[in-house]
Amino acid sequence: MAPFYYFYIFIFSGMGKNKKALRIQKGIEHPPNVNPDVLSGKGNRKQQAVLRMNDAIMEYLNKSFHDDENVKRAKPQLERLLQKGKITSYRAAVYLIDKYFKR
Image 1 (cartoon, helix red, strand yellow):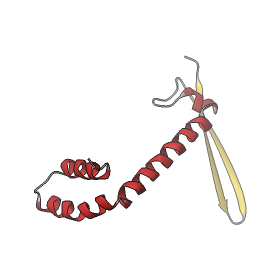
Image 2 (tube, one colour):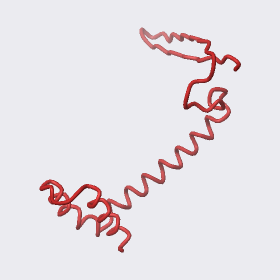
Image 3 (cartoon, helix red, strand yellow):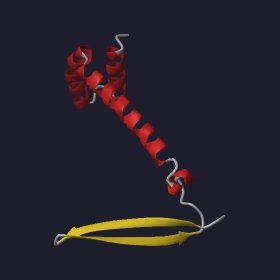
Image 4 (cartoon, helix red, strand yellow):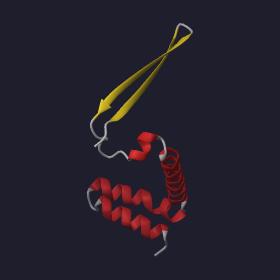
């Protein structure tokens, strides 16, 4: 496999001057769990767009869930049952989700 390069850029600001240091490290194969397009810069923006979309969805669902009246009413009682050990966290979560979807 062809060698690849890691690029590290460090920016230091101090005493009114910006100093930049660039370190290049040669490797034998690309690191695990890193898409080769990210190393070349091709897929970075696409992946960031997908991450931002997923974050927006999670933020909306989280707010919608916690603002739901059925969830707000049931949550304090479930928290007490959890603290007393009378219900599992999984069962409490499923119960709240069912309340949210009004099953």
